[in-house]
Image (tube, rainbow, N blue to C red):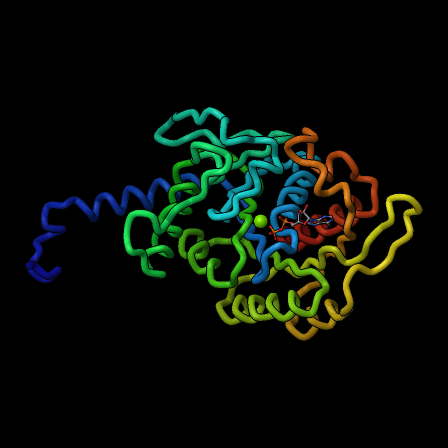
Length: 295
Ligand SMILES: Nc1ncnc2c1ncn2[C@@H]1O[C@H](COP(=O)(O)OP(=O)(O)O)[C@@H](O)[C@H]1O
Ligand SMILES: [Mg+2]
């Protein structure tokens, strides 16, 4: 067997050129996008996808050109929220695939759009006796391809809806070193706070710019009497942001209509209810994100 030292050039495999080409393709796509922002939480089910979709809706409402990369390969939700099903016909052009066009013209790319049926799972482990390293490499490769093979075009914002877990951001940063920042999302429950705190610590340590923390499901607004009450015990989110020295950028109430909008309803919650308390809270959060990025 040859080692790298025995090879002249790349040994005829042309691998160096292939890697350079791949990198060039990714770069040329990313260079047309002004701000790349990842929305994450260590925790699942706290509203990452819903907030990503509604932040996108608010930005689009302000005339911004927005795309969303659904980086949650195993639990993709962005297509569903933006009204793009896996029956969408993918069109190849310029060596890439056109993104799906969701509500308000938001451009999206999601694993969901590549699967044959709506209930097909992504089976990383089907073919081989997969190790964790192999699965992680596969995920990273898939995300690189979703990023580099999509004709995003000129965008003001690319929002990245992250899967749960605090380690995935490493892959994204490797692919997008100029990442403008991450938005962390938590609900007020002590467990969620505990997990998101780890994620913030990690980002701070790694020098990932943290735009701030959103408190989702902070309160509950009664649809009958509009009175506001608490959903969870634990009111220490501001304390958590102070301790971690990051901005507190949004306090978003629970609104039952949030889960009823999306694909079936033909629009996003923000677009339909921007004057509700939750709609206004989303707009304030977007003000904070935009201020952070443009300051
Ligand atoms: N502010 C909110 N008000 C009402 N429902 C919400 C709110 N935020 C999230 N949800 C609901 O909570 C569930 C989980 O949200 P989701 O965005 O899928 O979380 P994640 O992406 O973090 O797993 C969904 O059913 C969603 O509709
Ligand atoms: Mg999600």
